[in-house]
Length: 196
Image 1 (cartoon, rainbow, N blue to C red):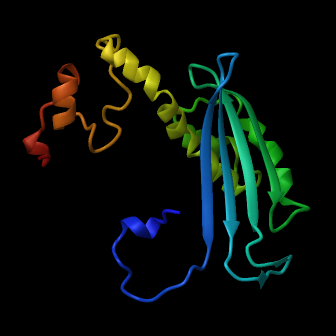
Image 2: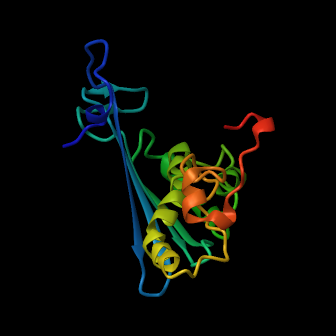
């Protein structure tokens, strides 16, 4: 199995695993034209340990939480659910899962992270569920890439500015990639503003 450490520099000191968090994201195209975006979070420790509320045997998940947001083509959330099979407080934590339905009506591409905070204030949310939900807009965009790439190759996207422009370093408005592939959306660098 590939580890994060395979891609990073050699640590400067001997070490051991203290905690492992795994997040799995999957997008599903539905036959009814909607899309399901799902996230699974699992936290575990390499040793047994005890908290005020529970004993956790080695390797048994502390958190095991799943969420699903169902979205339409416009990226409006039309369905939301969460389940918490494993939590440190099994009598209390799962109550927060029900509140994910408050995200129905929000749009993944329009200030979604702020909308999550607004619709799920701290007293109503599970911080892990909110964290997982915040990852789903990019999952949605990645799941649309095949369709978007086909449109771009056919020239259908020529008169509409692609969402990816201005979204990262590679696709910055004044960068070489935008200049090459989308010259109509290229913005010349502003030397006075201290840009390269």
